Length: 157
Image 1 (cartoon, one colour):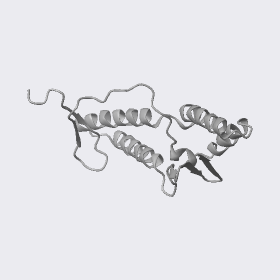
Image 2: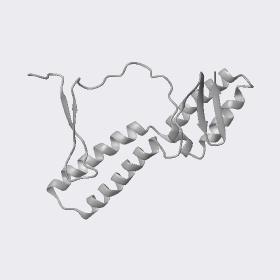
Image 3: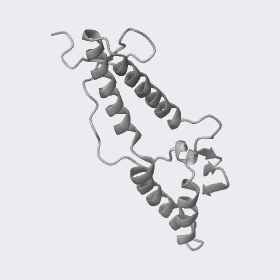
Image 4: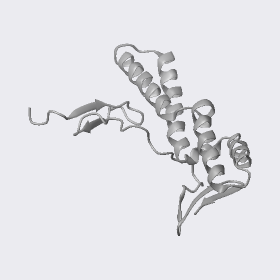
């Protein structure tokens, strides 16, 4: 075997009648423990997120570090409970799309084609939800970490 750790994944065909292939040269990626907190710009598209930030910020009682920590904690809860885990939903949708594709190779079904189209639309909305147009990602402004949320501007030096 020339490449014992190489893995080929057959991806779902969303925009073509061919299945794209994903070649992983280093095997499956593995988890490296807890990841650092990352602000998801897509949270800003949810109407309830501004209130999550407002309540968390007020709990800090003027202490910026505490307020930011409360925003981090509440954002993680919001992501799990309200916004949903996009990665898990994406994997589930991909799995369902692959199953429908396999069935459609053997059987003609208008209902399955309709389901396939609806799932494809859902999958596309997940992709666009991660990086919505018109929002700025968090970034550094000098030595200040800035997060821009409609109606808010949060920063920490």
